[in-house]
Image (cartoon, rainbow, N blue to C red):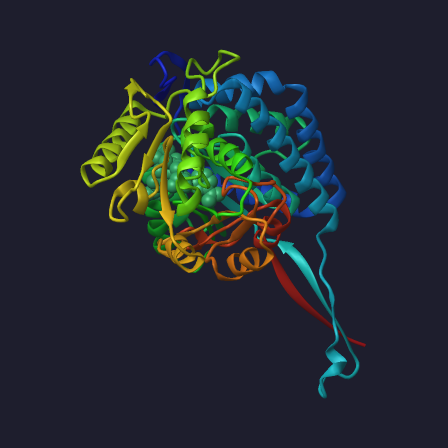
Amino acid sequence: MSARKILLAYDGVKVAEVEETPVAEIGAVLERAQAAARMMGNLTRDERAQILFAGSRGLLANQEDFARTIALESGKPLREARTEVERAAGTLWASGEEAHRLAGEEIPLDAAPNGKGRLGYTMRQPVGVVAAITPFNFPLNLSMHKVGPAIAAGNAVVHKPASATPLSALKAAALLNDCGLPKDALQVVVGPGGELGRALVEAPAARLVSFTGSAAVGRQLAGLAGLKKVTLELGNNSAVVVLEDADLAMAAEACAAGAYVNSGQTCISVQRVLVASAVLPEFLERFTERARALRLGHPLEPETEISSLIEETEAQRVQGWIGEAVRQGARLVSGGGRSRATLQPTVLEGVRSESAVWRDEVFGPVACVNGFASLDQAIAMVNDSRYGLQAGVFTNRLDAALRCLREIEAGSVLINDSSNYRVDLMPYGGRKESGLGKEGPRYAVAEMSETKMISLRV
Ligand code: NAP
């Protein structure tokens, strides 16, 4: 076994060391998971729900400990990490409620000429073993978005968290095991995605692959998974439209919060802000004022609002993209500076559509603010993307709101909220290269269970 050092990117300090799982052990891990899946399938809905409710209470009872773990492994400011723990507790609770609700339905077989004398029903059964692969940016809540629904549906889970941030997942698994999960029903494996993650996805014993991460890796996994069920929660270059009639103070505040929270390392981070040309100067002034007011610092300092990205090389990449956009004609309104892995909140104006900061997913604290002349143009600009996860629109015009709700190609369209608004129980998942399938406990439980048709001839 080899040990992996977990470092805080903010200052390079070592936070912990964890044992990596050798790839050669994946077969044994999955065999144990298959045995556990049989035990999980025998638990009642209420037994599964009570484990999840106890896990939810446990997260809240240990909120500070979990929040410090998240902050130290990911560089996320402690104040946001506390919120992540509350959200993760809510995700487990909602998953427990879904365990109670999981049900099939009566199928009216005798509505067909050859259905006479039969009773038809569907029942919902677990898929068996779920392979869950998660990214670094919400190391606890995104893990619970897979683990909670998988348990609710009666599955065993093998979870591979991001190599940079395995600590929250390991801690949460220990907690859930103490809440009465059958032995080996939740196993966490640590190691490089390219080897360990790939081995999990290819193994026949893993019946469903639930992946959250980048589109590049998602595409590879879809190819490897063959005939398995796959859900893919991928990236975005989220757009927000601000119309001329919008409440500009509200829009600027929500967009700035949505662009810079977690240093922009959110899959629905506000990246492209499209503002009606008539109100662009006023919006830009308000937005930039908020960006400049954000306090940078160590993630454990209580006042810190912006801390480091996950790695210094990521901060260098994002800074490179900002430089490219400026060379291609954008104006640097604010920010752009970097200290090690921490990047200042950055505002760009007049960004060319071929610049990477506009076209690709930045995953850093950068917002591009561009003007538009008409609603037609704004909708076309939003849809001119290979992604389609969430989009926000600020307007009080019912006609404009309805057009945006109908015509924007995204998994969610949010009126008078930024693209970064999410409630954990909503159906969440993208179109185009943003992914396949939905998360959110109710929807993930549906993905993680099978419908079996039953016909009783009596
Ligand atoms: P990533 O590089 O794609 O990694 C995600 C996970 O996949 C990690 O556990 C990684 O392991 C593993 N992995 C990497 N290569 C693999 C392979 N060939 N086979 C199997 N597993 C592999 O993503 P990230 O940088 O951690 O996270 C950022 C991305 O996640 C962004 O694109 C963001 O938009 C997306 N995201 C989407 C959502 C959503 O719900 N739609 C939510 C959050 C984040 P290692 O860490 O060992 O490489």
